[in-house]
Amino acid sequence: MKEKGYNVEKAKTKQKVKNVFKYIFLSFWAIIVLFPFYFMVLTSLKTSGQYNSEIVPKLYVLKPTLDNYVMAFTTVRLSRYFLNTTIFAVLTTALMIIVSILAAFGFARLDFKGKDIVFTLFLALMMIPNELVVITNFVTITNLNLRNTFTGLILPSVTSVFYVYLLKENFAQISDYIYYAAKVDGANDFKYLTKIVIPMSRPTIISVIILKIIECANSYVWPRLVTTKSAYFLVSNGLQEIRENGFGRENIPAMMAAVVAISIPLIILFLVFRKTIMNGVSKSGTKG
Image (cartoon, rainbow, N blue to C red; front, side):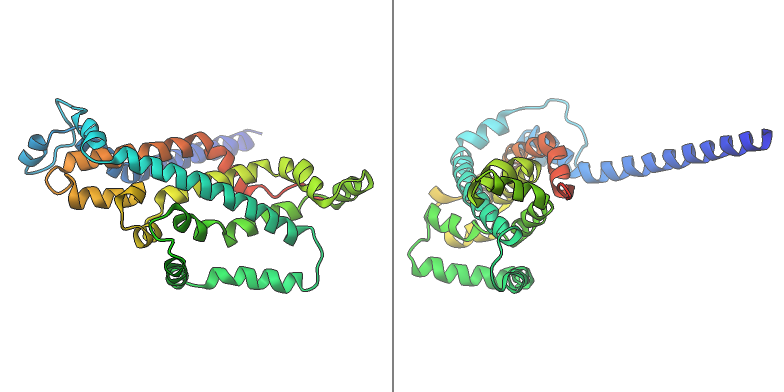
């Protein structure tokens, strides 16, 4: 008995040592990951004179100032870029979620000839390099005279192979018995989708919505191609405009303030919905 107790105590000690090393490693890695953001915030709280006078950048600031944030919203059109991004993200996400839900439901529940082949070809689209898609979309939008319009910004982003696949797998896991019971009660496919499938798949749908909003906010290449007027710039393109024609080259702290102001809403959004995103992506549905 003494030997058994000794082995148990030894195992607990080894586990505690492992946990200590694990948390030390995770803490060290967290510092490495978070340091750029810390340095960005720190720089945004310095005056231009303080920043330029530091031969070696200091990791602290004795007299922080918020003047750079005021300048970011008054000197340049940062608020306009925020508004454009909000319009783009809301409309794109709304259209994308409607298209993706209907497509996913069709692949998951409806039976039609050649469904497996069509779905396989659909998934094969993920193998096409984004550069080729961007070129094709650019030519199409240009021929339709939709450059420098929200329509031209939004249209190429209303479909997503990955999100359709994610929702399709989630929908397919809902028990067939639920579907047959709904049919017996007189529900058609559309009513079954809206009254049963969508409520049961809410975590995954919310995850897709949040991820799409973040994707829209981070979009850079496509908006940069189809917009040449600052009135249609998103925040990602607005930063480049600020750097080239605003105060970025001369006033790095003000530039960092603009970057922080743009980053904080996305960080808050992710932190608030992080559990929902993780649960939605990993959720396998209700098995029959």
